[in-house]
Length: 279
Length: 265
Image 1 (cartoon, rainbow over the protein chains, first blue to last red):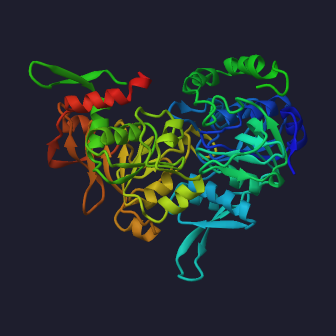
Image 2 (tube, rainbow over the protein chains, first blue to last red):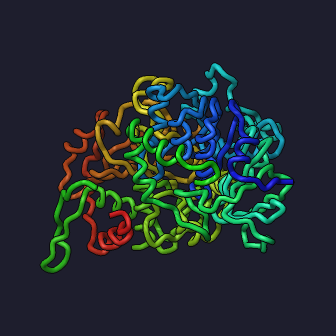
Image 3 (cartoon, rainbow over the protein chains, first blue to last red):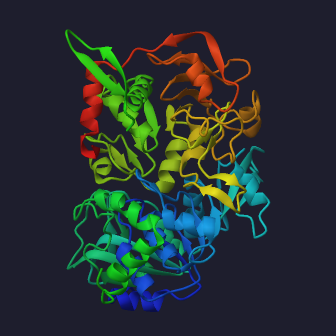
């Protein structure tokens, strides 16, 4: 059963230095407030997993929380680069960042394998790309390998399962028992939670009962570790039905992230000064 | 946006001025036909696909990698997951589903992609430029949905501004495969779609040579010379013997495009 706790308590209990953490939400429902709480609690050496690192991981990487990034598209959507991510890869600032990169199809299937309790997933993908050859020649364990279909003999691609220590997501609602409900663009959040050992879910509101909504994903309370009520916890991403994407913020982030000093000031003024639990 | 590059007679007593980016977007939109299904990348491809829907292809089905199928935004989204895409879609599916059930089986007619670098066989790089992979000069966003869009859509169209930096002899990293190193490579690699059929730039249109698969200029925008296209290409660019002169944007096309871009101006 999920425990309903404050955001600070959820992060303190669920996320530890060195953990592999997947904060998911595909453009929609990105758990920014939880990310900021991880920065405030000064977690270190995290392996950050996320299809689209987005601003949330730009912030965590710039704050020095990450040792490694597993991802498939690291840009500021519609705007340009993630400058903190680039600075880490290109100049090891504030610290070196190991990367493991995939395509979206590969990452999505790696989560599906993790959620399914399988060691790998199969897809048609990567053939002829640099990602495939890069991975084969990797010093660490490869996560992309060819596999022969036992029925047809066709050569397909296997990708290794992702099994994070912790998944962190934002949802529209939960009830008082910690059953979680979200709708709109659902991304890979269900798969990320089911693939992980532990999970933290921030919600816009906790309600007495979850009335059914067409197309909504429900994660029963017993699949979730901690629920924290954090209204606006996805900002500058959004929660359909509660807020709209703050596109101006995404545009304005470019100048903040481009400059190490401007970014450091942003961290001091907008993240560290705030009391834990607020966003 | 770039500065105005051209003026064209646009009706009685009226001169319409347009930018090179607008010409490129209009030309890209014209390649899409009503009723097609189209997997759309963000940026220039998204602008072109929405313009086609506004002008001549109201039944064009737009699919974004966020899982929004049949999205009908009235204004251009900034990201592939803006709320307007989910609210106007025929169906919203999860990310594993959009790649596994919808893209992978070859259900989608056109993949519409951008590029940071592209080579003469239409291979695309959006990963790293310069240096080596571990220590790149420029770290780009990476693959996203592009490798499988390039592999599995029935056809691919690439929209990219043409410069010697973007049009290179060999891409620094193959993120998404076009024709590999030439004829036969797609089959050998087991890629199910036909590959890139057009590259649309701010100068004109390139299509693969039917024998060598090398991209060749087959169309030029008004006022653009073949020499200018060659000058802005990092390989010895082939030009068709009589490249088509592509008509400039009509007033209706420009009006519709500017309406879509209202929010971003």
